[in-house]
Length: 344
Ligand SMILES: Cc1cc2ncn([C@H]3O[C@H](COP(=O)(O)O)[C@@H](O)[C@H]3O)c2cc1C
Ligand SMILES: O=C(O)c1cccnc1
Image 1 (cartoon, protein in one colour):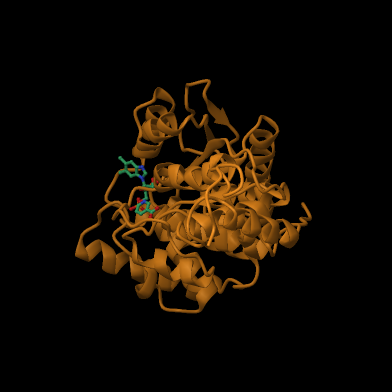
Image 2 (image 1 turned 135 degrees about the vertical axis):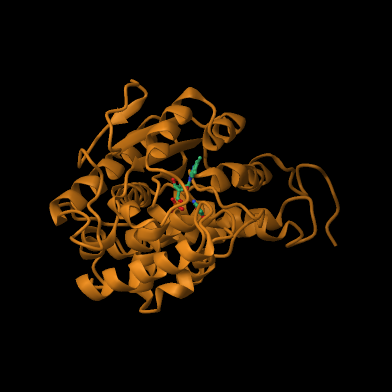
């Protein structure tokens, strides 16, 4: 079992960043949320002009709950897409390339062995999670193990030079686990947060909601306890992402959140290590209805709205250039003094 300690934001550096941004050649506040982002980056990193090289980490696992007909896609797609990711053809592969982010793909429990060296074998359960309508998804020890894989993955990426982490997932059925977790944390009916995931029909959506309701009635997870939630209705991919976020927050490294599943993992990271949320920036707003609810719970406002509903970390990678714009603003713009521009 790990114990975590997330440092508070560096408020002095945030004040310093604000003052410096006001000295740049533009009307005060005219770069709007880019200015807020630059101040936030200073608070997270403790540096007003930080290096924020991106890195993408994707956590993959299968979900036993797919037996209940809650996904539009067959389970094999997790395996096939993991190979596609390292083959360079998935959404996250092409967007990571676009922004110059190295991509690492971790297998925490895909049901088949994945015969590719670039899919990092960290299987915590050989066959993914159990069907949580019938039994716990995993043991508490396994939840911790998956968290630890993510935690170490983040630490390694940061040691290798990453200054901004994109944390993504892949796992057919993972929107059902995410819906159950979020409904439990917020004490609301799953109907409010469950959506069509990768594209289920009306009947499947009704089933998905019912599956979440029954699972929560059966297991009664403790909404304050990330390990109880993960072991009862979670996923290995979701646990891995939460661990990576905590690892990054401990190392003062900005985390760019993606869609619904990622933001539910962020809620768990905050339960595991309070203060982690201060190190998160929400990239976009997913079409999945639970995303806005999770984002509001974390008091996060998305940078862009592109009607995405893919996951994998794609929305975060696509939005990274906005973070980079805030960074180059504070690194490269001239000041009124340096450019000899008159101030009123
Ligand atoms: C081809 C394909 C590629 C994907 N990449 C991410 N997802 C996304 O959809 C899945 C979750 O949706 P659900 O809970 O409805 O199964 C996850 O794998 C998620 O990463 C994909 C889904 C598909 C079909
Ligand atoms: O919002 C997401 O991340 C999402 C939505 C549907 C399917 N997969 C991911």
